[in-house]
Length: 391
Ligand code: SIN
Ligand code: CO
Image (cartoon, rainbow, N blue to C red; front, side, top):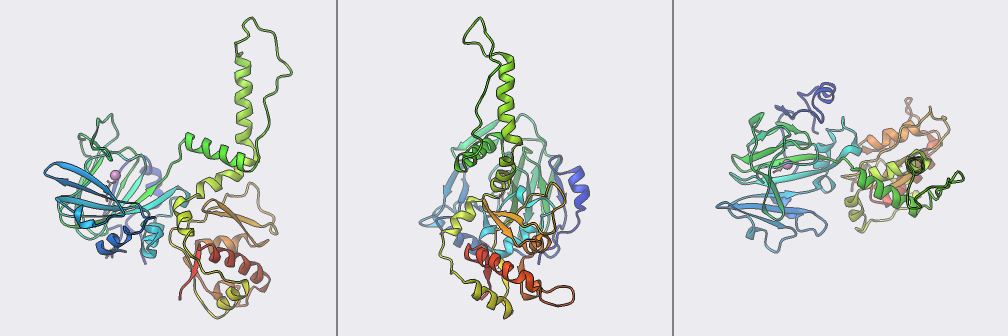
């Protein structure tokens, strides 16, 4: 439904990604908003949806977090409603976000959607993450500057702004235009008329986050229990002294854990971990038997990947044995495809939906050998809520 254009993704990665801001005029031709402001407001009624309204009345900033008793109470002066992770709730918003999959999906965070009235914005600020902001209906003036030591101010405890910056991009965006803003580049968007914006946000884990998660994983799975050893302990003048050689031994012990198989197992678990997907999995999901899934597949039902689901997998170190099974991760959990099916499963994971035809070979013959195992996998994914059947 959405097709990204007017961007050469190879040139973009080489020259702009994490380096320079870029304006992409008409990145989407005849752009149609995947959601309108009323549906956006409707989403904020859910407890699990993270939303905020930022308003400015005569220079006084306020921030209110959803769900709201009465949303209109906060839509005062110049205001923006900003809703996180809309890709998890609205299939068309998920499709829009997926057009940016020339960047790996494990680098993506969520699609934040905003609606602003005339004159509104959240003020000049910095974000720690890269973002593509797509202009939906309406128009907005976007200014973007270069990284520097900016003075941060907090006109409200939930709002971090900077005092000002010199723009290197200062343009009015209309529906279908896109602006790419690398992390830590100051920016400011001011609505020239009521407008929608879609922010494809990326994640970049810090060493702190990784070490914490890796340690939790090791504890949960009883891994990495090797201890410090020092058969070569030598006498020293000060008993409290740690010798440089010993500092190196401690570093080596810790470095060994990063070189272990445990690291390879943990990384995709960590990168696919998605708190939001977990929240949704608490919802009631209808359970199907393998037999029922098989029958639905054979009767031509469509199986859709649920919005917000981004399966990932690690490239094998060596060329895979054709018969080996294929492991991928969704929301921090590992799944295995049938033996010898790596290519089929990879294709399945990237298709927005499949039907029975997915399981026929080039000559139109059903691949019966795979059928049973594949159905078992599909059943598990449907029962987890990661794929669903369109009624
Ligand atoms: C928006 O108002 O839609 C985006 C806010 C931002 O600049 O991060
Ligand atoms: Co921003």
